[in-house]
Image (tube, rainbow, N blue to C red; front, top):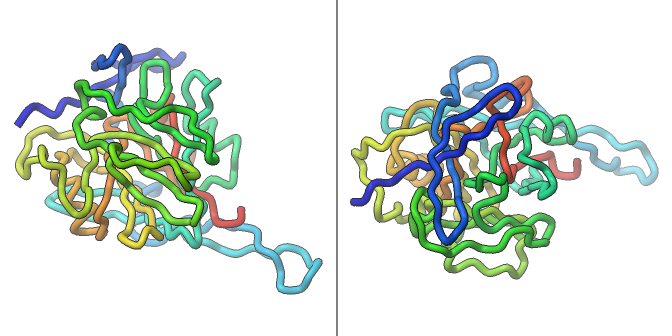
Length: 293
């Protein structure tokens, strides 16, 4: 098995500079991440039961009457799997509006700034591997517009560990994770490309090994077989790719799941408080708002 390298970025952001290891392919660098971001630690921001209700406006049954508030609980829990612990957020798409966003004009996006700009966001995580210029490493679709093209190039680092994949939200209100080579743009409202794919059609990535010592903090996204529920996960502990993939398949029931990024990743939920100083800069951001908010 070839070494599955985690590649990184380094950039001063006024207060913090991060060390970087950059993999260059096809004339452009696609970066993931290494330290020195601190590990997530248990506390009030990470809970094992439903937490931090979010309020979305909904129309009253009486025409012309004021909108009433409806409480949408954020299903966030800690899942133990293969000796590791993971923060998992479950997002039924009939209750949550899940989007992918990226501001091409921004020199990277700090998670705190994204949340300040839109208080309706109740869940947020960085969307995937990106370049030193804070552009997505591959496809990004926002509101039906393709802001970055699909990247099928070969190269080093996690992004290029084929098969990689695309997480997409479709016009019909369902979600999917597909092999990048099989991606089709029809009906796609939001999408982000990253790699490697963790699970496709119930099969763990062929290069993952159960007892691999390639350990890191990792984040990912999975989709239920009917496409109606999205799962976001962030490891609390150092985990290898195989264990992270089987978390989605064996614990969450996902037949398809995608690695998003590593050490720098954050999974913020309403009630967690202000994101820390290491929460960015990112490129794409996956967000969730109560449906109708």
